[in-house]
Length: 112
Image 1 (cartoon, rainbow, N blue to C red):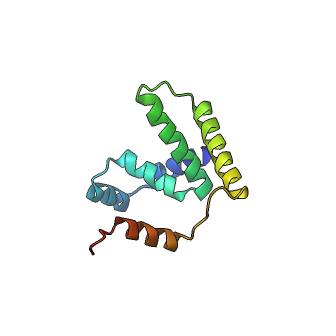
Image 2 (image 1 turned 90 degrees about the horizontal axis):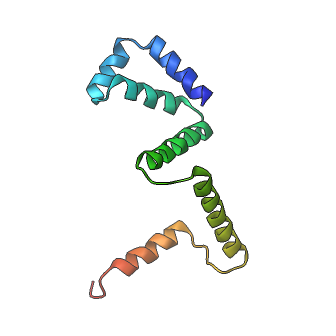
Protein backbone atom coordinates (compact mmCIF):
# COMPACT_ATOMS: atom_id res chain seq x y z
CA UNK A 1 0.00 0.00 0.00
CA UNK A 2 2.87 2.34 0.75
CA UNK A 3 4.20 1.65 -2.74
CA UNK A 4 0.91 2.81 -4.23
CA UNK A 5 1.04 6.02 -2.19
CA UNK A 6 4.60 6.67 -3.39
CA UNK A 7 3.62 6.11 -6.99
CA UNK A 8 0.60 8.40 -6.67
CA UNK A 9 2.76 11.14 -5.22
CA UNK A 10 5.33 10.74 -7.99
CA UNK A 11 2.62 10.71 -10.66
CA UNK A 12 0.98 13.78 -9.16
CA UNK A 13 4.21 15.73 -8.89
CA UNK A 14 5.61 14.74 -12.27
CA UNK A 15 2.51 14.87 -14.43
CA UNK A 16 2.70 17.23 -17.34
CA UNK A 17 0.72 18.14 -20.41
CA UNK A 18 1.07 14.70 -22.11
CA UNK A 19 -0.53 13.00 -19.13
CA UNK A 20 -3.33 15.57 -18.95
CA UNK A 21 -3.95 15.13 -22.67
CA UNK A 22 -4.06 11.36 -22.27
CA UNK A 23 -6.39 11.66 -19.31
CA UNK A 24 -8.72 13.99 -21.17
CA UNK A 25 -8.74 11.85 -24.32
CA UNK A 26 -9.49 8.76 -22.24
CA UNK A 27 -12.43 10.54 -20.64
CA UNK A 28 -11.32 9.78 -17.10
CA UNK A 29 -10.99 12.22 -14.27
CA UNK A 30 -7.32 12.97 -13.54
CA UNK A 31 -7.46 11.30 -10.15
CA UNK A 32 -8.81 8.05 -11.62
CA UNK A 33 -6.14 8.05 -14.32
CA UNK A 34 -3.43 8.70 -11.75
CA UNK A 35 -4.62 5.85 -9.58
CA UNK A 36 -4.75 3.54 -12.60
CA UNK A 37 -1.25 4.56 -13.66
CA UNK A 38 0.03 4.09 -10.12
CA UNK A 39 -1.66 0.71 -9.86
CA UNK A 40 -0.12 -0.51 -13.10
CA UNK A 41 3.32 0.59 -11.90
CA UNK A 42 3.13 -1.79 -8.93
CA UNK A 43 4.42 -5.34 -8.83
CA UNK A 44 1.82 -7.99 -9.65
CA UNK A 45 1.65 -8.97 -5.97
CA UNK A 46 1.04 -5.39 -4.82
CA UNK A 47 -1.55 -4.85 -7.58
CA UNK A 48 -3.38 -7.97 -6.48
CA UNK A 49 -3.42 -6.76 -2.86
CA UNK A 50 -4.71 -3.31 -3.81
CA UNK A 51 -7.39 -4.77 -6.08
CA UNK A 52 -8.39 -7.28 -3.40
CA UNK A 53 -8.82 -4.49 -0.85
CA UNK A 54 -10.76 -2.43 -3.36
CA UNK A 55 -13.16 -5.26 -4.04
CA UNK A 56 -13.66 -5.82 -0.32
CA UNK A 57 -14.44 -2.12 0.07
CA UNK A 58 -17.23 -2.46 -2.53
CA UNK A 59 -18.83 -5.18 -0.43
CA UNK A 60 -18.62 -2.99 2.64
CA UNK A 61 -20.07 0.04 0.83
CA UNK A 62 -22.98 -2.01 -0.51
CA UNK A 63 -24.33 -2.28 3.02
CA UNK A 64 -23.72 -5.99 3.16
CA UNK A 65 -22.78 -7.16 6.62
CA UNK A 66 -19.50 -8.72 5.50
CA UNK A 67 -16.58 -9.54 7.72
CA UNK A 68 -13.48 -9.49 5.47
CA UNK A 69 -11.74 -12.00 7.72
CA UNK A 70 -14.71 -14.37 7.42
CA UNK A 71 -14.71 -14.03 3.63
CA UNK A 72 -10.97 -14.68 3.52
CA UNK A 73 -11.43 -17.71 5.77
CA UNK A 74 -14.25 -19.07 3.61
CA UNK A 75 -12.08 -18.78 0.49
CA UNK A 76 -9.18 -20.51 2.25
CA UNK A 77 -11.53 -23.35 3.24
CA UNK A 78 -12.84 -23.62 -0.32
CA UNK A 79 -9.33 -23.74 -1.76
CA UNK A 80 -8.32 -26.35 0.80
CA UNK A 81 -11.35 -28.49 -0.08
CA UNK A 82 -10.56 -28.27 -3.79
CA UNK A 83 -6.92 -29.22 -3.23
CA UNK A 84 -8.03 -32.18 -1.08
CA UNK A 85 -10.41 -33.32 -3.86
CA UNK A 86 -7.55 -33.21 -6.36
CA UNK A 87 -5.09 -35.02 -4.11
CA UNK A 88 -7.67 -37.71 -3.21
CA UNK A 89 -8.61 -38.29 -6.86
CA UNK A 90 -12.22 -37.17 -6.36
CA UNK A 91 -12.06 -34.79 -9.33
CA UNK A 92 -10.52 -35.12 -12.78
CA UNK A 93 -8.05 -32.46 -13.85
CA UNK A 94 -8.54 -31.58 -17.49
CA UNK A 95 -6.32 -29.58 -19.82
CA UNK A 96 -7.87 -26.21 -20.73
CA UNK A 97 -8.04 -27.05 -24.47
CA UNK A 98 -9.81 -30.32 -23.69
CA UNK A 99 -12.21 -28.54 -21.33
CA UNK A 100 -13.15 -25.97 -23.98
CA UNK A 101 -13.61 -28.72 -26.58
CA UNK A 102 -15.97 -30.56 -24.20
CA UNK A 103 -17.82 -27.33 -23.45
CA UNK A 104 -18.25 -26.52 -27.16
CA UNK A 105 -19.50 -30.04 -27.79
CA UNK A 106 -22.02 -29.80 -24.97
CA UNK A 107 -23.35 -26.50 -26.35
CA UNK A 108 -23.63 -27.66 -29.95
CA UNK A 109 -27.16 -28.75 -30.90
CA UNK A 110 -27.36 -32.51 -31.74
CA UNK A 111 -28.45 -31.87 -35.35
CA UNK A 112 -25.46 -29.68 -36.24
